[in-house]
Length: 415
Image (cartoon, rainbow, N blue to C red):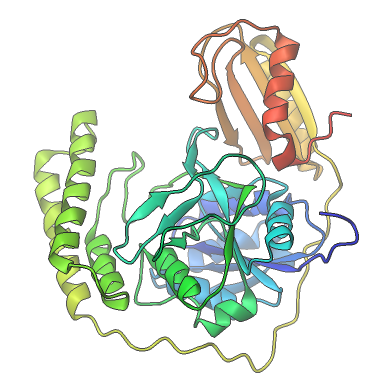
């Protein structure tokens, strides 16, 4: 994005419920985002707001208390406080790369779209959890071609909309208000898919922003355990039924059978891994059916446009120091070097620590609570999971390779 280009203001909305420690980690990463004009809105329950109060960014945030477990209502509560031209959404168990908003802004400018979706990396910090995907009226998600890192408008089949993943999506505020925000009938699951379809039906364009990356940890909640095993799938059944009613045309019995089979296979996978017992599978599938039945009969009021009589004042986050430092180490000096990196982060700078052992161990990348991007693994091991299991290389060569892989997302300038 050139210096002469319009620089849009963003309102970043963090939705949080009963995960105060994760919220603090997310806020540390947002505090390090490299963008000239954005504000942070925290929509959270009381435990989250208490956690926020002790964070360095607290004095600069807008807050709204949301004690009900309804992700759509929580996001709408944050939207009511937004003053930016665009609204960016992220969940409490996610962290954005430092150049996150710059790449969203670049995609908006290049494509002329009113909404963008970024890519999401999973728990190992390297593999993608989601890239360019579309969703249809049957609530099915489809992978779309995604060849390079440039922003693009995907060519979608009729009836499909680019899926705006809720933990890494941007929408122009006035457009989102005109659509009525998120549909609060969706307490959890498919709320972002529903918005994507409604945006498409309104004739609005959404674009993919590959380099606008977020790392999603899938933290434990009242719906899943720390091992990612579902503990409740009631709302999956409920939301699927509501989705089909909001977007009619599909065979409901067929979609329920498909949903039940998918969830059963997911649970059987947990059984094989030892994270779920057979009796739990039966109970969870019964919950799915109960949720479906509630969704079939739930009251679905019309979604009116959100009227804004007065836009709230914009509360910008103070700009941090420019640049991003990279520290490296071998295994022997890892602890000492990491301590140095954490000290740098404490001083407000952005920093990555890359440490290799002389092994073929696979790499993992984590964003630490201290504010450090930490990548560990073997000098001869693979980072990208499609790469060779073992490859011989020099330490300096491998460091440069890993820096090149993330330099655009972090704003690392090797010159």
